[in-house]
Image 1: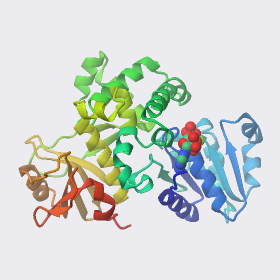
Image 2: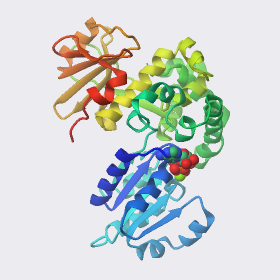
Image 3: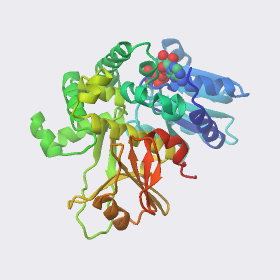
Image 4: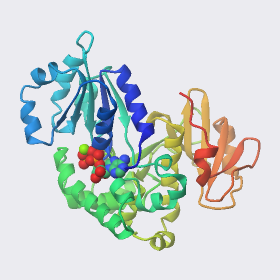
Length: 387
Ligand SMILES: Nc1ncnc2c1ncn2[C@@H]1O[C@H](COP(=O)(O)OP(=O)(O)OP(=O)(O)O)[C@@H](O)[C@H]1O
Ligand SMILES: [Mg+2]
């Protein structure tokens, strides 16, 4: 078992201050395992209902009665299967003294669980469980983590062939079973084709017109596919930063396959050699590194951006918290240098600091405001944003 201390501590902290905590993450990322660990560690009474289990569902036949008499920690697993429970949770969360706290687990974003965000407004906090990160697997495992991705079963598989097979099966199950269960009525072959196409555009700016043309549907339709797969937590979007500058800035999001291992599956990459030879190797590394940077910094989704101007200046990742602004350029080189674009970003965005994240061994200053940050040393050389 890989210890997930950071997530455990954060979930426990949130449960201390909120009647309902939603632990959200893609299928198979480790939600149930983490919840069981939280239950094991608490001294209070605990109860768990798995909404994929017929017996548990039967116990919830009258949810208000069944849940209302419980105190301590109550876990509701796979809550997206019974969104009508959110109404009950709202009533229970509003009781005086709230004897029970609820940890609800789901594999879709709050937007897809729209009912929850509206019904439980002000009573629920969200915690996103991502794949295994470098602080969990160890920085020495970074190449394996990149190739295999962060799903525990894929990362821990005995061989790369087993890992690849697990991911192919994940993709199949996701398209054929999980997507329909989310109430999405799009043929699995269509979504597979779309997902694979996004893999080819990984780490690029979304171009609805181009994708619509390639796909033979309207721009609105491809946008709907994009948002659906984002809400199902298998794609990620990074929003463009814009403010009142004179330069014209890019306004479309950047799009990523959410897990590097799944990206490789969609691109037909299995081995390290496949990856090194593939034209998307740089884009894959960039997406992987950005994930690790935001995890390390503890940047919340609304604090993450990229920036690009039509004049060509750009920044792969901009993290904004309060008045603090950190910029990151990611490049798979061992000899990072400063560029015009970096200076433009520093100046236009008034960054506190800019990091040129690279694949070499050492972290060293490039200028007063630019550091060449060795990715392999990110846990040592980059401090989390303080809360
Ligand atoms: N920290 C971990 N270390 C090792 N293996 C893990 C860890 N977390 C999860 N796993 C393994 O990964 C698989 C998926 O875990 P789990 O069932 O907890 O995920 P989940 O997010 O609840 O999945 P689902 O959405 O399908 O319910 C299981 O086989 C589990 O044993
Ligand atoms: Mg589960």
